[in-house]
Length: 121
Image (cartoon, rainbow, N blue to C red; front, top):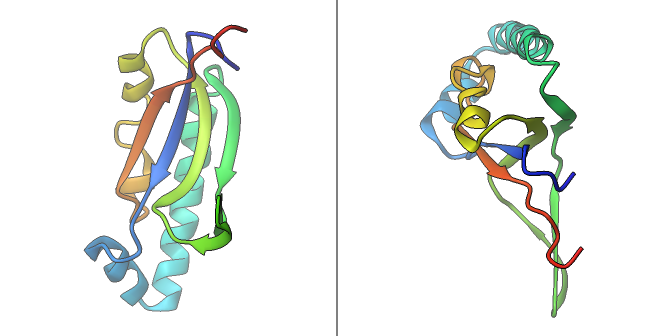
C-alpha cells in the first residue's frame, strides 16, 4: 500500500466538542434512530465509492501508547480509518466532502494523507 495513488483517511472527533455533547444529550431512542440513519448513510457512501476504497478500515477502539517508559492508556481524537485510491491528494480529500461522519454523526473532520513509499525499498 505504498503507491502514489493511495491515501489514508482518518476520522476525527473530540469527546468534549459541543456537537458530541449535544449528541450524548439526545434521548436514547432519538440517538439510536440517528445512529441507524448514519450507518445507512455511511454504507451508501461506501457503496457509491466502492471502486476507490482500497481498505474499508473501521472504527477504532481504546488506545494504548508504547514508548521508552512502557505502555500507557491514552485518549485521542481518532475514531475510524479507511484507505482510498485517488488521482491526487485533492481528489482524495473531495471524496469526503459532506461525509456522514460529520453531517449525521458528531464527528469533526476527516484528515487525508498520502501513503508514501518506504524509503530505500
